[in-house]
Picture 1 (cartoon, one colour):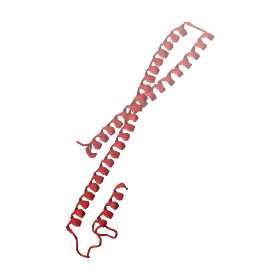
Picture 2: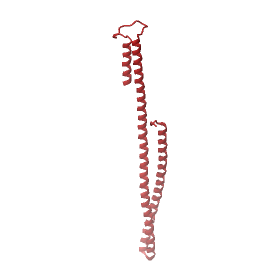
Picture 3: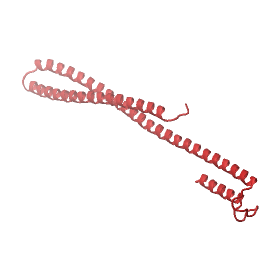
Length: 182
């Protein structure tokens, strides 16, 4: 908008310089142009062209800057997504380790209880058998959660790999297609 105003002012100045109404030089005959008027007209045209050229260059730099800002924001978004997936992977691995330790402890407890159950008889033996069955079911549930957690960890790892590859592709694309002054 600023350039358009400057252009209008420049055109008005040219009009006044070549003898428009109210000019200081008066009215010239139709078809005649004075040397001073012509030189002034040429100078004003050069100045207008320079200003327009500068404006176009400035607009181009502004557009490139906006593209760069948008590209950076998108890359930051994708990088944060990778970071959140890495956090989820670390949490899944920690949970997996905890579950694996629980399975080992449960299996050890089952072995000890089975040894003790062999020595027992009667109602105590039945109670021990019921407890052993509950612990076995609980251990199977823990093993199922462990398998599910391992699958989730693998999925997170795969997603991280895909996201990193996509992020690298985007970085390469941006550096190739966005003029970064290189």
